[in-house]
Amino acid sequence: MMASIDDCYTSARGCTATLGNFAKATFDTISKTVFTKSPYQEFTDHLVKAHIRVSVQRTQAPAVATT
Image (cartoon, rainbow, N blue to C red; front, top):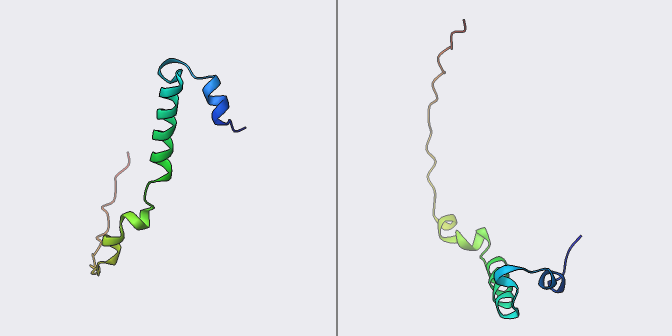
């Protein structure tokens, strides 16, 4: 079940109990979740670079003795 902002405000306690603090906390929370860049936007410079493939030879792992 999802609660609305009205429900959150009526049950707020402590530092968010006043309307001013509640409004600031709500704005901070929404701005941190809505206005963040998507991973593609954030790492565009890295994704544009021409990457070079490197071949790695794997050696067989040594056998583990069990007793």
